[in-house]
Image (tube, rainbow, N blue to C red):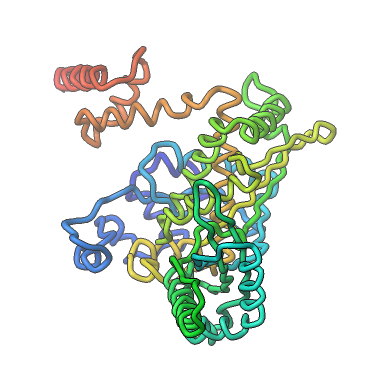
Length: 440
């Protein structure tokens, strides 16, 4: 029997035992998890400012993921009901069709320095000519600012420029873009150190030669168009057959829903948010900066000039196969930040098999495509609420005070009610307790 069979129905202790038996965890780590020791306060106090405690979120695992013919147990940190279940379900259907195929096309970060007082296109052209002629000197300045990354085979790669002429609303801006190979790090601090070194070099040069130019700011960008990962899958329409719904009918509607998210911005925002449910959860679990990922991916969704859904689903009616693909920017790391500090982040990397940064990019993108697939399949067939109702009822039971030995029974009773709200939940819990007390 698969160790994942009925995994969601097991108690916490039983799930941990299964992970130990499957050699995903050792006994010591399982005990640590069971005792809820995710982040000691003394570590938290050094991670942020004005700390008064820690804030807990559920740490779960998504199942069934096969990516590039390798199995993965996906750590996810999220409070929203149904996300982990949906990711696991989507991955299960994809697994039946050979799993996900993913690759990283490039993994480079971009930073920028904005210059002021470049008033004309001719001045911009002259400054561009000077920068191109001194590109190697500027790259050497950046390398000297962070020599350790150069020793590891990374560091500054290129410099390019762009000029934004003055408009009625804005001043003129001349921008220098620095491209850096950050290796296993996301590289924010590394990038900013290099950019500030170039910033100081430029200001010194401008002052020394009595030039009117000055820098406004120097900082990395979260619009990471040179840090891209693509994941795809092809699914037989028969896989999507459910009760009275034909798989071909569902597949066609998934493709149409994908087209709708490319057309309508209102839908695109929710389409991408659903995908980000899964992406944020694994990014947070692995100790990465989910705010940077959100900024990067949503900015990438505007690359055509209109905000659009990022996944693309097409249906091959001849062969009755649904093809899904997702390309996103993914500025994550496997070292730095809280990754080496937060005990739960360390555990997440352990559960994933300690992937390098490029492999982690493929894993995260696969979770996003699985999440989107599961959501679209539900949306175009039985509707999104059907799968949410049980989890909503369970949350309500807990909110009104149901104890652990009462939650499942109260949830079942709630699902039989015409409305789900706190007043109903309170009454159901009271009735259940009265009946339970009478029978005992």
